[in-house]
Image 1 (cartoon, helix red, strand yellow):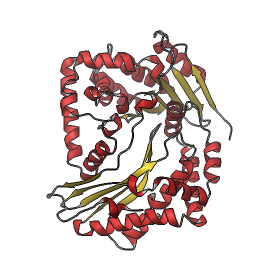
Image 2 (cartoon, one colour; image 1 turned 120 degrees about the vertical axis):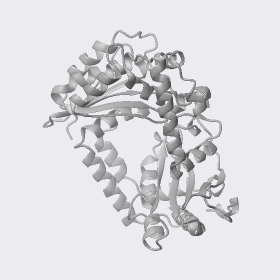
Image 3 (tube, helix red, strand yellow; image 1 turned 90 degrees about the horizontal axis):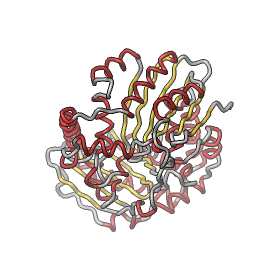
Image 4 (cartoon, helix red, strand yellow; image 1 turned 60 degrees about the vertical axis):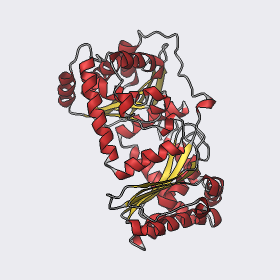
Length: 426
């Protein structure tokens, strides 16, 4: 594959990445911030997500309506998100609208207005968003589980914060956090599509080059910031629910680990799709659940593998036993070459199909820069996937599927449902 990726770092630390995709008339442009909910203190829980919302409320030269109208006029898809380790703002537009799209996003991030009246309204909007989570059992269980799995750590707190914290985010507190954490050295600008690198650098320098360069290097997480996962057993009774919701989890390789490729293959074999062991065993062979699956979530310094299923309360014990059976099977029997080849083919197809999408390419550039500090070419990813052996996959299972480290959470009309540590033996 011909490498069309270029990178520039401005003196103040802004990182600029581009990938030219010949033949396209579109471009995806975005700005990512090296900050997410895990970087927040307890009293500021939710402020990254809050700022993600608040920047849409106006800048020094655009009102909220101006932002909405201009976004619609550009005709592109404007997306914003907050995760545990980053915040992102992206827009896909025709190539002739690149400068206008960049000017809009950069203005929002560099010059937000943060008016108290606007922030108060957004507090109410986000509190309603929290209530939606509470009314969505699988998401609600996920938040309960995270808090217990990462106790007293920011990874265990909800990305959107709590009503108590969000209600305190006035102009002073919001503007102070924005000025500190949206600084130049925490910004990654990435674009993919019909874009020239020099044009992108010139656009970025026009807005961000004036920023002070005294702290032109991102601050890495201190080792003490790394969480120590617990192994909780949580049984939350909610009698009004029709279904019971189940999570089984174990530690997992982190996003920087050399074992992440083997772990990804194993996770896919266990619960990654309709041909996976869990899907076939629980849904197809027995009809016990509509939604069932498994996979890994990898952060920069810690990972978690989780199985999720939603089923009738009367069937919860059987679903739990079948899920644990698949973990034991992975440890004791490993995986077959045919199973491994299937998920390799799926993964490689996904990588190659993603090369056709400017959204995927721009997002990959930014995420790889933030997590790995370098670009990982598709050829390297494919080679690492192809190199995984059945022995590698079984090594992951034997390393991470340990009885004393298995965690469980269940939510629903669970009268009579009981689990102790001995039942979770792998």
